[in-house]
Image (tube, rainbow, N blue to C red):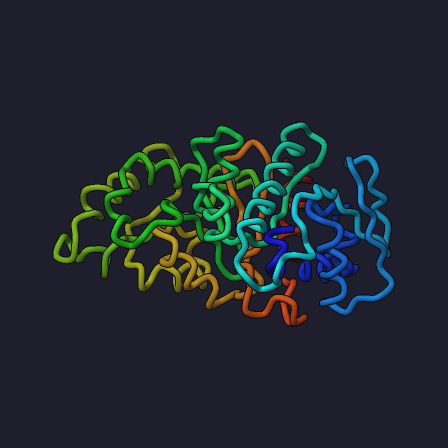
Length: 322
């Protein structure tokens, strides 16, 4: 359900009552039934029953009903919608941890997550930078990556939530090679053929032969060459200001970006509210919306559920071909 003080309950209510989602998957909300009732009110969706359950087997999965695995771990009446809250941050992490447990135990097929607030979970005492790090830690996964998919562009990140000043020192040949291999393995499994992979440089003009930086020469290029020796169809490093255009016109199936905003700015420019975050490398399937908790619009009924709808569809699709 995401942060109960954010737009999570509203977009969950909107997404789960759309025929598009109802025919695609049996959805169970892990969160709070009271927050979901408020979400229905905010979304102005009448005639829907909230069915609180204690275990997955109690879910009805029927139209006109939203099943909620109610953890009852936050006092919703005391929360201020649209405001940062330590209690909401703690509850949001516990929703995720419950989902991970159920997925690891085989009780559910996949997870789609509504947004959490990083500052809120830090206030609650957690040191995670976001969903991805929680999932990796709780599943004891070391080799993982964030992949973003949309109808126009697919992107995988080498580094995730880092300050720009820390990106270069967190890049190395092994990490880039692992990401390229993950991209290859993931897309090959999904499509049944070798994907065309483009690797972005870090610096302007991919370093211009070392004039603007040497990461391309010392780190990125060697990783690409090593991947080629493994039979992977990969090219790079390519100038960051050109590679996304090339991918958008079909030259590449996926772009390996060196850092968060390098990959997500072009993705969101092309497919805002329609892109989906997929954590690859985990032993379970997990997708997420590509946006935040929307505290500025929470409680106003304006939140767009499209990204969550796409996340549910993508996670259900991945579960079917697992």
